[in-house]
Length: 518
Image 1: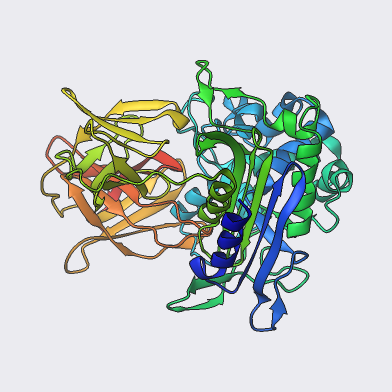
Image 2 (image 1 turned 30 degrees about the horizontal axis):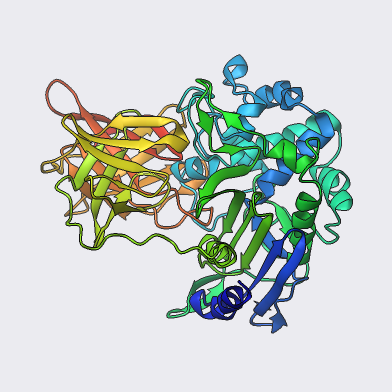
């Protein structure tokens, strides 16, 4: 085991190249590895050390929920404060518990910001976020019935905590968690422009070079935590030391979670519940432009892994390599002898209205473009394909897509044929008070969103099938863009385009009416 782990540690800087990084590996509360390399700030030549402050991004979410449980007990104590921040939803607003489990049905505000025309590197602070959130008039699924990642769920929780307790969120984190656990330098670092010790995040690749990432976003309960590797080691040791106490903070965070119909849910209180190499794991990743992190805990083996990169390499994959080394496991390999299936192509998923595009990625592997990002699915001998989270299975009725982590299974609708290019025009979404412009620009159609946050880029639309197009979103306020927007155009009785429904996995089902030719 030691040799395998040593090899992983030696290989990490080359397998995931960038300015700097750090990793911690613990077993039974004992630190097996505490290692940092490279530079926290390459221009100022500040080395990356275990005490370097780092943006943990979405790993913050479990600490937000922890502060809630410690400060007010049951999530229901915040329900009224949550409703007050969603005035146009009123009593229909999701409960705090729905928010903590990502079952709220709220559209993610970083995705909706793109519909309001936010340029990728524009400022987005408390005023902008409050306006986007308060303008919510509908949910994109019934609360408690589905799972969809939504950052504003946790911003709302942190804001409501301040409303109810009268304490700042920073103080709640410090007094309720950090001081008790021994996370000495952890802090709320909401302003993403700089870290107090000069640590910088970087965009780019080893092949193209790196440049400092520009962030002008204010994060709070969704992704505002700053902490060092040593701080996270203290958190992992606290988890292991209190593992047998059902009243411990981590035990309360990691309780089983279900959907409204009783089906087991894979996410709750800011923690993902899953399996790797045949063993249950709890954890979460984090990503902001220039930063990637991941932490996981395998309770059956009492193993913790924390990975931090101040660049955009895959921290989750690196953490899994360390876990595999400790377990003596090997990731399953795709069967390269299996031929490409005959069900490749474009489909529409009926419950969300989104496109599902499937193509051949490699021998024995297909690529699915549907959710937040493209997924690789291994082909199986029975004709299906899957990756443990999503399964595609052909039946006599057609191709089914199973996504149990979202409590969803649906028969995909084949979507084929030429896409007419007579879609140019200006469209308005009354719900958002925002516009979509589609222009032929003397050739193929381009599209771009605009609203109170500005005027987004015009992007070349990808044709999928009659009246079904994709609007690419390559960069966004958040590190990971929301994925391609599905544009489903609709026509009137005369066959003229009358409107369009826009959506992505993070924010779907928004209707636009045509208001002009340009």
